[in-house]
Amino acid sequence: MATFVLVHGAWGGGWEWRWVRAGLRSAGHEVFTPTLTGLGERAHLISPDVGLGTHIEDVAAVLRSEELHDVVLCGQSSGGMVVTGVADREPERIGHLVYLDALVPSDGQSAADLIPSELMDPLRERTRAEGDGYRMPFPFGDQPEPGVSDELFRWYAGKMTDHPLRAFEEPIRLTGRGDAIPRTYIRCRQGAEVVAPSAEVARRKGWGYVEIDGPHDVQVVNPAAVVAVLRAIGEGASPLYGDSSA
Image (cartoon, rainbow, N blue to C red; front, side):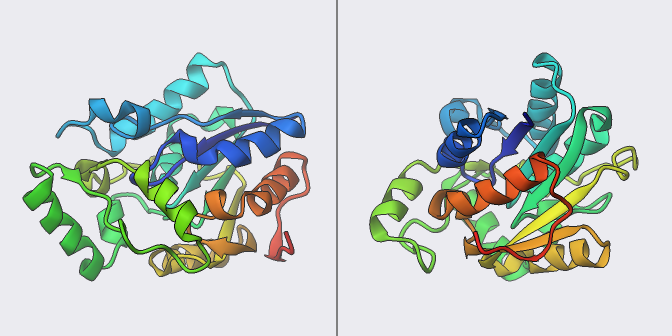
C-alpha cells in the first residue's frame, strides 16, 4: 500500500481529486487531499497574508500531523510550487515527487515568474479591480477547455474560489535538501502551454516522464489516466518514460 498526498492548483480545492482519490483508495492505497488556505472550503481564510509559504506549511503540516512517510507527493498546476517547497522542507517523509501538468520552480522563482506577462498582467489587473488587491478571481468562467463538456465545466468552474495573489508572487526558497527525491512529470497532451517550459525542465533533468490524454485539469476530466500513472509510481513501476495509453 502506498500513501499519496495530492495538492490542487490555483482557484481549486481538495474536492477536485474526488475521482482520483476514489480510484486510488479502491486499489488499497491511502490518500490525502488537503485544501490550501484561502481556497475551497477554506475560502473564508483568504487574506493579504496568505502566500506560498502558507500553502507549503499547509501540506507539510499534514505530513507531520498524520505521521506520514514514504509519501508520493503530487502537485497539479501551481501546486507544483507547493510540493517543491514541501519536498525541500520535509524530504525525509517523501518517497516520490510528482508534477501533474505543473510548474517547476528553481530557488528564488515565483509562480508569477513562470507565467507569461500577457497572462499574469490581466490577473493582477482583475485582482486590483475586483479582488481588493489580493484576491485573484477565477479567470475562465465561460471558457471551457477543449474536450471538457459544458456540464462538467459549469460544475467545476462553479466550485472555484478566489486565489491569494501573494501565493503567485511570493518566491520559493530552496535549500537543496529535497534534490535527491525521485521525480516524475506527467504532461497532459492537451494541457496548458504555460507549463510547457516546466515539462522541458523535467525532461532535461532526466526525471521520469509520461504523457497522458486530457486537458490541464485532467484529474477531473480523465481521472482514470491519472490513477493509472500514480498507481504505477506508488506500486514501484517508475520512473516512467514516454507515452501512456491510460
